[in-house]
Amino acid sequence: MAGALASAMLFVAPVHAQSSPMSLADRVARLEQQQQNQDQSKLNQLNQLQQMQSTMQQMQGQIEELQHQVQQLQEQNKAQYTDLDSRVGRLEKQASAAPAASASTAQAPAASASAPASAAPAAASAPPSAPAESPAQKSAALNAYNAAFKSLRAGDYVASSRGFREFIQKYPNDTLTPNAFYWLGESYYATTNYQVAVEAFKHLLNQYPQSDKAADATLKLGYSQLEMKQTDAGIATLKSVVSKYPNSNAAKLAQERLRRLSSAR
Image 1: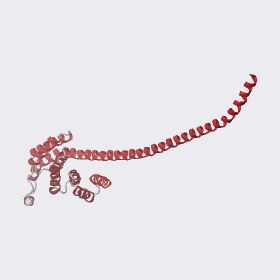
Image 2: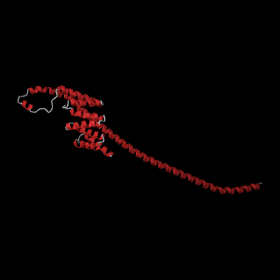
Image 3: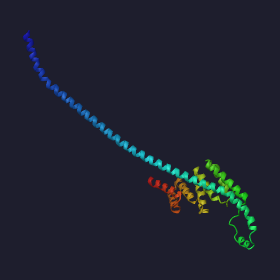
Image 4: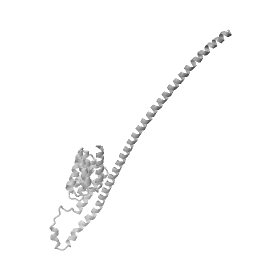
């Protein structure tokens, strides 16, 4: 019995010794496969990381471009608000100066009565280009203008356009009539009624080419033409602002709009 057991153990021992190298080879192969799988996984992760970095760089570029555009819009809006504020200031000065002008007009007849007789023919030989307004008419015109402008500042563009139209009809020879045409055009522009705005701006430029509002009217004429898809005409008008009024704020706004149009093409 003991001999048989010993023989069995001797038989089993060589078999175990022969199978061990194969198990080690399998383990090595399995480890190599796992290493390859890990290397491939790391390579995939690296590719994904590189792709994410590339995407983030693209997004960063887009964000910077959007920030630049926002900054440009903010600067443009600031320039427009500053320009509007300066216009309002000029109009308020004109409004405050009007009563003094009315008072001097009222005193004019007394001064002319005391003038030498030899001066009368010279005054009579130069007839006025338009009938002079009486102090009462001047005051009424100023009140009508201020009421229309107040509506404009409040954003009531329908009331302001109606007020400026009535002002122009009642007081066609008033010193504020050119301004009334400009703000009439602005009222229509604000309500996207660009065709009528164009007519108001063109009337101002044709009838009052030396007006302080000529540069701004030309600028808004170009804007209106662009809004109506009259691109070539709008570009030509904006270029004329730059050439005719190079030192004006309107010229700066025209150059900025032309630059944006050029970059969009």
